[in-house]
Length: 120
Length: 109
Image 1: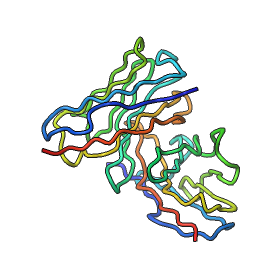
Image 2: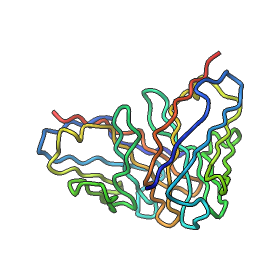
Image 3: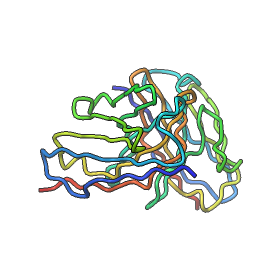
Image 4: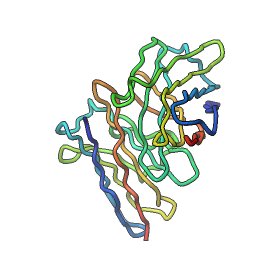
């Protein structure tokens, strides 16, 4: 059974750094065909793709946030970590991780999401 | 910056048929953009419906179908059910990464 679960702080202050962890099960992060994406949704707004990482260590970031994002993976812990620096209230959103297939670029399984609020 | 455009809202009657579209600011959408379609209901994570234009996930009902139509990616719902009321998002892949559309709020009325 494939599952993904996001974890991290529910509240961060402006200018702080956010670290989110996606813990996966039911598949391996070293599987050459698979990767993990991070996607967010601010309240009342559309989904926004943030970044993805594949087993090849290929990493891609959304252009608008590239300078603030870092994605990495720890295969032994089955975890993918997203770091976002210099948080702003506009970054308040539900953050999701999802599994992606390298060949078809198919996103299939999603985590439940974690709401992060940025406020002083 | 690349923009992916969807109809903001559509209304359909139960049992009816509706088509949602997904356009790219860069020009015609082709299968090379690997269109994905997602259904999103309040309080739940998004659910993937289709990938690579027209391929259904194992859990996707057959009333959902995908195609390329007039230079856009399209999602057609045939025999709409009340439970299909939701937000629908497309995702297109570009050289520098994927981009979501703004979403279509589908009302079944």
